[in-house]
Length: 364
Ligand code: BGC
Image 1 (spheres, helix red, strand yellow):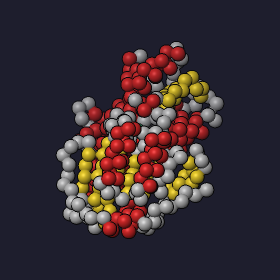
Image 2 (tube, helix red, strand yellow):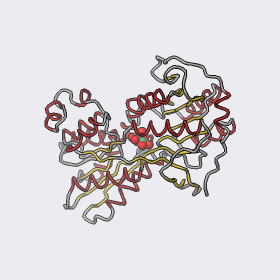
Image 3 (cartoon, rainbow, N blue to C red):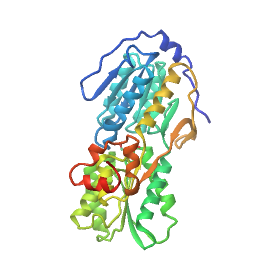
Image 4 (cartoon, rainbow, N blue to C red):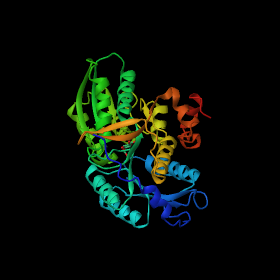
């Protein structure tokens, strides 16, 4: 079953809406812009990011990439962060709708609150987009993300490449149970690793809200329960990987036990260069933000956006028109690719002791 496009009138509503040029907001939690002096596109795009704790990506990579994409497209925008609080996301959405956004993109904190936001938006004639995370049971017109099953496959393959043919005990540190992506990452990783009979899963747990501190506690428990006999860690992102590396360091095993990650954060890339992390997954924020801007503008104009296919919402088997981008596996050998692509600045990664490692990796 395909979701209905109920909002073909959005473009016309957008044209009728008055354009209020907003200056840049100095408040760190929000940014607004008029898209390069007034905006070429009639309409305003609201984006609500999830938090600042589950990954540094949202504020350090997504926000600036979204600002550039909207500025370049000449569209008015308002980007806010829900700070990990679903009620706050709901309030921000209400305010944005009240302030006349034509399209609302959210990175949900859980599907239930996300679906309620989308339902309310639709009732007010506001089109919605799922940014990065699919809202199960939601009503978004489009889903813009990376292929998250492939992300998990890259992590599984990356860990296998680091471990090799030996017998190995593996611990999984999965993402938040409320995040559909976390389910896909784990499925992707299992689809690669489960068929490798020399590997044994000796512990697996989801980390609520991707909380990095809780991840350290959980990993410590799993590590102790396995009598310290852990040979590899499938960590779902760089933050969770960093938590595991911290515990392994305490046990004198950092660098000998490969750990995976995701997001190609500064810390993740530094750990990869130092050899305490076996790999990370790079998902270009420029690409994802650009795809969101294009999709949102199509909606504002009442046009169909270009999609790469559909994604099945596992809660009701509906098909959500999607734009899914290709993630890239990063090891010590190609950290340079992330820098060359502008994913991180060499000046941020190559600090202190990392300067020499950067040089060795061909990063200047
Ligand atoms: C995103 C990851 C991120 C995680 C925690 C996931 O939905 O796809 O990139 O690390 O959330 O914020």
